[in-house]
Image 1 (cartoon, rainbow, N blue to C red):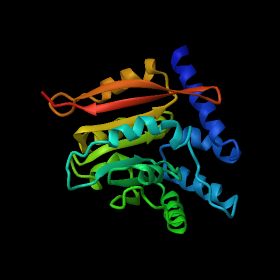
Image 2: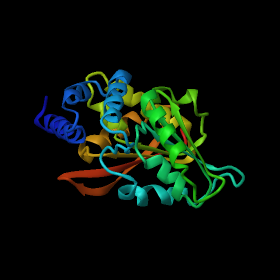
Image 3: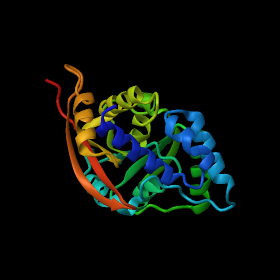
Image 4: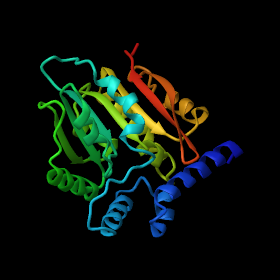
Length: 252
């Protein structure tokens, strides 16, 4: 392993360890098995059992830190009679999806998807109890159990306007057996995105590592092509975060 790759791995381990500092029994399992459903079921079960009051669990940061990256993409409707389709991929128990639903001036259908039925159930119960109201009365919010390597089973081809990935790809790339799954998830995203759509990946991985991976994996001669860009989100708790934007382009 090169010193550069080793430093990225150590950075990822520090980030995960910080996120789960109150879950010491899970830290090693999470780092090595973040691509496994059973790991997340155990994590969210243990997390929810620690308190009688529900609390959103945010990986990296919450909605306010990234709203200026997400909301500008929801200012124009492609189909005047239909809501914008937004997918929060690997939502866990984050408030990100509900915040998009709450703050979007245009009608949106926000689908919060996670591989863990425990996380999905917790969010469904929370939203039902809180009765969150959208800014636009035509907006919709749903939570679904979904393996994001199989997005096509829930989303039609070229049907989604914005996909938000806050740490999901990071989790896969840092797992022992997750790298192939991360590549598959990226390809699935490009297939379900509209031609005018965007995938936003929020990550602490340095552009020197993430950009070449995205540029390679988002191309498949005759099948897939995409443009990739990056912006700096900012520093939080000593970690620098980035927003990687992937947009489909016509296949030549």
